[in-house]
Image (tube, rainbow, N blue to C red):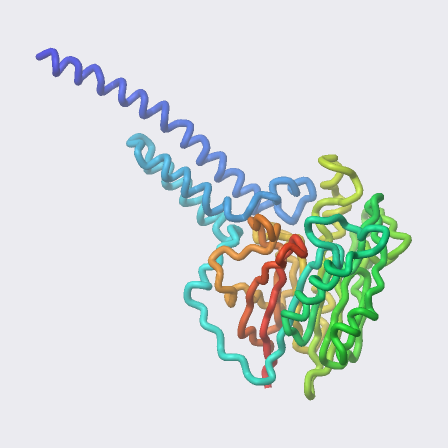
Length: 384
């Protein structure tokens, strides 16, 4: 055996050992990610203590397996095992990744002349800019900022506006009632206005009925859930959906304006771990169950839109009403996002309709610094 053959024979075991040592971390990470995805699918939305993992950007469920597979490709040992594990995590987690493959092929029917334009938006403490606070200065909202806010609303040219966070927040994290109805009437002459809790619906069509949906009957009976107090706006913690029935031609159409409780409690300051708690989870569940019960009994065509404070990765979305159809396929984005509007990684604003409502157009509208949420603009029509 020549010196070259000896050197080659010696180097081959070394390369194999290096490959083995390089493979095990990737294999371990792949298995750990698969376990995390399996736990997430089993626990998300069902137990309150899984709220921190739920906050991961949904796109991670698609990106992490791809990165692991890319790192594993040069490895000869266990490449097949790593590929199988990452593929399993893609299959298990792909449905909560927030990807919208239907955007590649979905084609909507043209809108008829009598189609309805709907605009839903979490305003960020009403007329306050996203870079500001949750409450206007002592002298009130500066006229220029208020003018920008109402100009943005008018620019949407909607027949029905579903607006959330019609409220300010004081330094003690308590909601403060807003009364801007007179300004709304000036900005939208001839429109009709309904208000409940921190939701306001502004409709070009006559309102035939309106009511807030109370979540308290849907709280767990086996536990005494403490409802946060809100002296200035008592229904703020318990009414998070405003149902408004409007008369459109010969039909009554229901609009549900929703702002589902956040998974994060606003009361404890900063990074206090108490901000993620069982009560907040139970309020979210009760809110969605109350909404589902109302929709299931409603005989009218219905549109549901708002800030659900839930990403595609959150299992609590399974509590949505069975009658409702997700409008996401109409969006033109492969990965639609609505929050944070400045650096959007999550989508927590949604729109749904009953099967007798057709969505012709649907887009997410950036807020131009007025809110941390994008708005949702839809063009819909009801079946004859």
